[in-house]
Image (cartoon, rainbow, N blue to C red):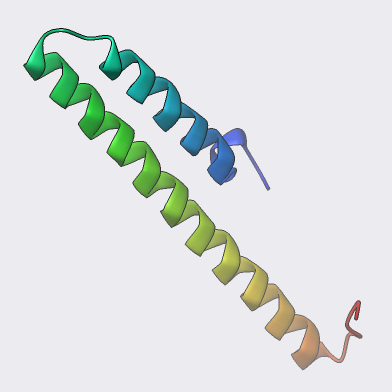
Length: 72
């Protein structure tokens, strides 16, 4: 992993924090905006997981094609 943004748990923590703020917000427009932001953080977490899985899969394929032994 290169940066903190490469960790889906960070995005999920941002989502939880933003939802907590939204829960305490009286203004409906502000609350809806914060919930939309929290949802975007969740999407970032999911996209990060997909990207990391693809990178891992590509590395594994490269190892196999180069004749490198598996850790299994």
